[in-house]
Length: 436
Image (cartoon, rainbow, N blue to C red; front, side, top):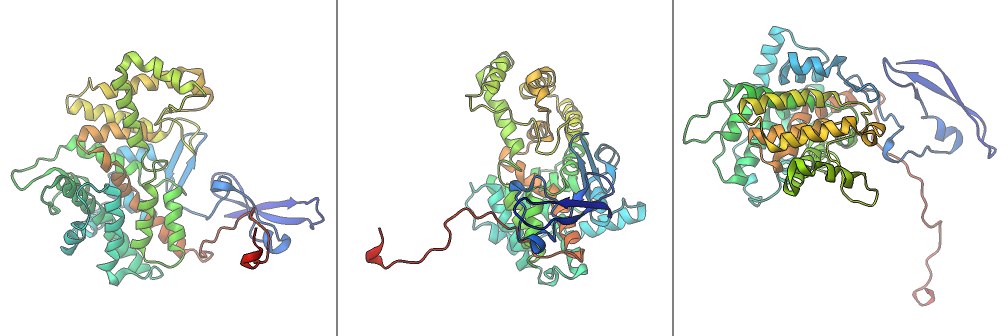
């Protein structure tokens, strides 16, 4: 981080002119350092949604929305998703480098040794209703981990943060699978250490004690790719929540539980579920024959119909994750003999229209990763209600890496956004009888 110059800010209300440093990162826009603005002028900046505010410096993930580029520690997501497995990417995000063969073996072993959860977690789980939303269950389960691991609660101890990171990455698949098994009334399945990270998760999800379950390598690779594509995504809402929560000094499990709760929102982690619901509604209208009618309703300013799975808060180009997910979608449907799946046909039809229609092209409404990931998960057999929990499982490594980075930053302080107050100025309380 260097300082290529200064920004001069002048005011027309008599406030003295101030000079603010301009900070330059390795890539991306320059940033105006406004930390001295309030002490020198008594003024705050105003930025609802933090759309123009850099809340931290980071070395983990870089997004260029205009180019449609996503980098983890400098590596393009297109290369990582094709050449690496999820645990290799976890190592990269946590420690800054891809592992060599020995490091990969050691890291995999560390994660595998921590996949089991305390037996009492079953009794905690049984306190939930069977029809409880999986994200309600996951918020509780992740937060409850802090009750079982008092040896790794100190967020200011680097070694304790590291073991907490390993425990969270290792146990999230077990917790998600337990939440699923509980809702369908099936026995919990223990982890199998001889399986891969993602293969083990699918075994815990779909196996029963009644018969052997054979893991399908194509489906494992597809789900592993979903994990990789969702592992981190810069300072999004849930990541910012984790950082803000951890800035108070709370333990890592509580901070990650806060991230899970934020991810639950339909504007964040629930987008793929909304996309699948939209495709189902079009199918109910008449399928491919009704796509034109649906698009017309989307374009109507007076209509409440929205095209889900297109466009992104950051990407103003084709989401690079969507391209990879589209290929994965083909692979999964071919492997399962679902090439003529009506939802996939609808998805392809919508994609073609959106990429060619001036209405969508001018607005840069390209397909995003959620457009395809819901179809893939549904084909694998994951229920729609569990989609966001899968997202939380994948994003956990990004959350803990961002938490670790923030705590290790010598400039970090407890988060404390300010406000533009527009309420009543100071006034005095009148006696009851004198109030209007």
